[in-house]
Amino acid sequence: MVHIDKVYINGEFVKPHGTKTLTLINPDTLEAIGKVTLCDKKDAAYAIKCAKEAFKTFSKTSIQERGEILQRLYDAMSRREEELNAAVLTEYGSPISATRGRTRFAKNSFLTAREQMNRFEFESVLKDGSKILKAPLGVAAAIAPWNANYTHICQKLAPAIAAGCTVVFKPSEYSAIETQILCECFKDANIPKGLINIVNGIGEEVGSYIVKHKDIALINFTGSTKVGREISKNAAKMIKRTILELGGKSPNIILDDADLTTAVPNALKIAFSNSAQACHAGSRLYVPESKFELICEMLAKAVKEIKIGNIYDEECYMGPLINQTQFDRVQSYIASGINDGAKLLAGGLGKIDGLKGYYAKPTIFTDVKPNMKIAREEIFGPVLCVFTYKSEQEAVNLANDTIYGLAGYVSGADLKRAKRVAEQIFAGWVYINKGVYEGKGVIPHVGAKQSGIGTNGIDDYLQFRFIS
Ligand code: NAD
Image (cartoon, rainbow, N blue to C red; front, side, top):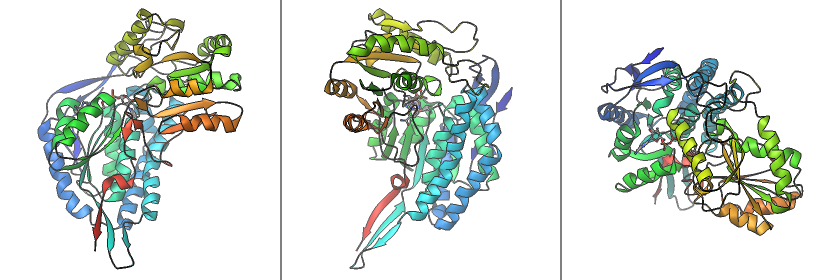
């Protein structure tokens, strides 16, 4: 049982002023594995003060200096890769194969940002001698959720550092062990003091304080649309720049010429990836009415083949949900689907027999009406809703009938047609004939509609200034 009683601020591990603690539970075994002492507003104020002080010098560093820092961060994380993976398994319960990929993606964020920085024009001179300067904006605040905790941290830190900003980060309090190892990597990488400052703490208290603080120039948030709205509202009072990566309820359209032997198992992978705690989950499946029965039969068979439970097994696809609250939340959605008259094709209420942790059953509903709660709201758990459509246009209309626009998926043999359908889905990323969502990083990270604002690239952290 570890006790994380220090927090990384100004390049040191310091004792927080806050005294509240949170017990960390392994969601797979339900054993208590640690305790974290949470920061309070005073700790957040101290972190902001240090970041503000550090900004004075860090904002003037050269591209070369920042490139070296990004490289050292990558190297430090590479040295602790196995420990980071192990922490995710015990603290989050994510299966090993998925965890490894995410750790690689997280550390690569530093190299990706360095490459982008090396190509970036921070200053350009016009014919008449006027200049366009792109200067670091100030102290950035970043706030992240518990799913893929350090992926979010690295993905937000890397472009901020490349741009010349210092950062105050509030990770999820449920990911304290992962965060602690990452902070040890920061220390090991010998980065300038005050460049990265971490405050573990409760969102409504510490997160909200950071968002409202006058010395925070921009907020980069990943989390639910509900909290994103609250952050937008608070940030608007000082017209702060906000980058929001929010929830989703992404559609997956199977066209009538699709190869069902791959499209059907892929539909389950897309719906239940990252133990179904994924913003990009394809949780609404649209199938041609003429193939509904066949597809249902195939789904019912394929769902039984998903490997769940032994998270250390390379073949395992789904682990537990993060905690009791999340488990209860998913159960309440399943109950609402049943009460509203949707039909269970697989799964249902309760835990999976024989598994100790917070394992919800992979659940598939048919006969779902578009106005039902399970059809409209993000569940963030293993619940897939199946709908039918009669025409291609109806499929597109149904897919777009949502407040969200994070991702979309299309399967079909005629690529020209599949592309035509994909281009009509109004979402940040749309994938054709692909099993699971592929990493961001190479493309701007943009959610449409209430799934987000911003790109999470270097531009987000810069102030454009015209000097003539
Ligand atoms: P959440 O919105 O409850 O919390 C996210 C973070 O915000 C946490 O660190 C929390 O402590 C903090 N927070 C809570 N209230 C706050 C407030 N008032 N002010 C400032 N900070 C506050 O989300 P969650 O349950 O931790 O994560 C799941 C959600 O994250 C899902 O909706 C999912 O879709 C979304 N998500 C989106 C993406 C994306 O890239 N678009 C990626 C991962 C997760």
